[in-house]
Image 1 (tube, rainbow, N blue to C red):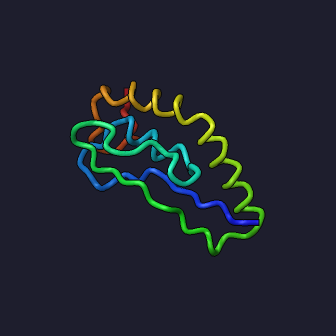
Image 2 (image 1 turned 45 degrees about the vertical axis):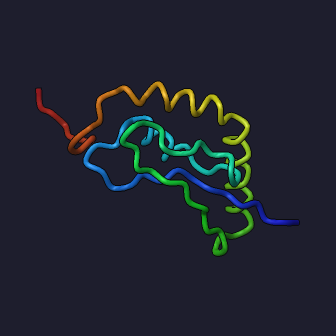
Length: 101
C-alpha cells in the first residue's frame, strides 16, 4: 500500500495572526494538494508544508491519515469557516491571561 502524503497549514511568526489562519493551523492534516492555499487575506504569510511521517508508528500514521481524509472531505466548509474568522481583530499578547475581577 502506498503511503498517503499529507500536508498542513503553518503559521509564520507574526505579531498578529488572524483568527482564520489560526483556525486553519489547528485543523490538522489534509491529503496532499487539498488543503486551502494561502494567502487567506491580504497580509497572510502562512505556508503549506508536507508532514514528515517517516518516524510514525503504524497506528499513529493510520489515525493521522484518517484525519487527513476527513479534513479533505470537508475542506470547503473548513475554508468557509476560516474566511468568516478573518475579519475578527487579531489577538496581541497572551491568550491565557486571567484578569482578576
